[in-house]
Length: 183
Image (cartoon, rainbow, N blue to C red):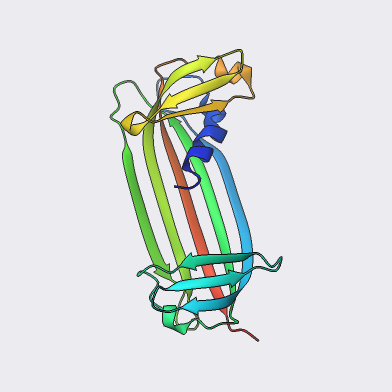
């Protein structure tokens, strides 16, 4: 959820596509990042892991109950995390029902070392409630009346949508974590 508001606001411009007889979708952003760190400390009762990155930045994470091989982690182990984020915005057809949902899955990495993948896909429906051609910007109203506004770079694209257009915003994030024994 940490990137939800920023993601919605930064990609709103790409919603802006011409309405046709069928719904259109567009991949707005796709990013893969890799981070490495060394396990600096482990607090077993709270399942808290302190990681130290190569730039000496210290990050603390909590391993949830779905992390089944937590007991195998050791101070000094090298952790590599690959984070993937993808966002798709789809123009909805008139009368199409709203969508609101989250799906999450976790899988183990295998038999030899701890690690695994956790992926989440969230979908919401939102309505374009304001368009400002002077700024230029677009405002969405989503579930529970939450409003999101974003500047738009392409004024021509902004001219192709109207107040009242509805969209589905689908974002997927996944993290693949692998652990190698420390030296």
